[in-house]
Image (cartoon, rainbow, N blue to C red; front, side, top):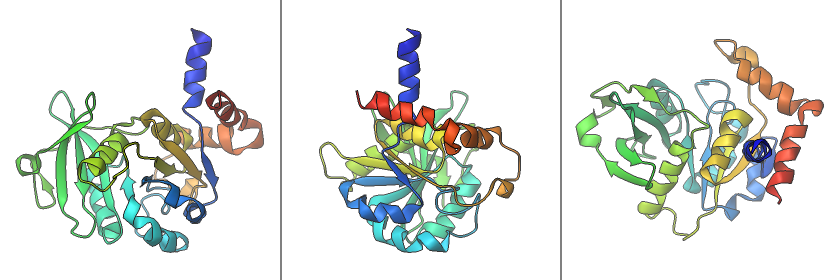
Length: 240
């Protein structure tokens, strides 16, 4: 039992592509039907007011198959819309009410229009409830929780919506999620049943407004040579 649980846990850290930054995606992005992107550390520094100029070209190239899939607060999602709406849509998963029923909050590419869709994770269905919960950029009630990565629901919901709306045509779509953190981004991709690409973090720990133990653990477990063993184990177990 312990060994099986350990192997299942380690497999959550499988990385299919190790990249310096988004520019490395130019070599293989067309192999995928959909590409989800983390924001902080992947497109720019933590809560950066604009994307890193080094990745703007590739972001424009892959934008027709790409969306930002984040776990930020709604106020930050509005800022993501303001920065990226010309290129990509952006989504988060939040809960409303005492039960925290999951809803996808989504700003559409181009129009920047807010949509609210109730998500049923057990069946992978979505129901548009925008008129009941939002008007313009304003929500009628405050979310009671944010479903943060590595919870895979936000990524699964975004892909399900793309399939429903015909933006993904493949019967068994190949999906890639790109981020800079193992504990959230890479695990989210694997738990969702998709592929993962890890990029080196844009920005420094000093960019954060508060000290975060998870970022320190990232360095100890994965970035330093002695800590690469867990990532290698994930590759090994995933190959069998």
